[in-house]
Image (cartoon, rainbow, N blue to C red):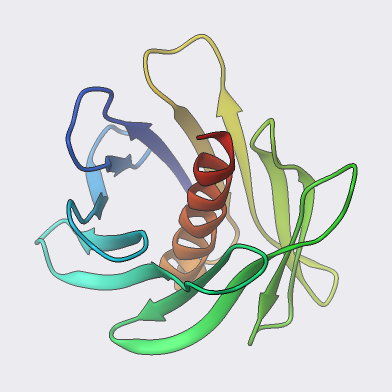
Length: 157
């Protein structure tokens, strides 16, 4: 399943529409304007919240908790390294590998491919292509990808 992110450029709260290959909006990720720590909600096309990502404060390295349908699932943690950004997903046996600063990485579980993300350059606003192997992993993969994007945005600011 291929999905496409297109982040809005001029908006007070961060908002990203997530499209299918035919241009239909399947999900919307939307940040909160006023919150302690960053928080992104994931809504389906009917505006029902299917998940959210919340920054955990008071940690040495950036950490975001992932909730699906109100249930805590995992934490996405940036690991301490000198030369390269590395992330791990605590609570799932997912492995993330690739070039995070270029937004070109993949997610696997037990050696099996789950998802990949690739940034499209030379576009107005950030634009990404996401390939998800299994439809049942869609919301979880989106939440992990959004958490990594939040950490990268936070470190760039």
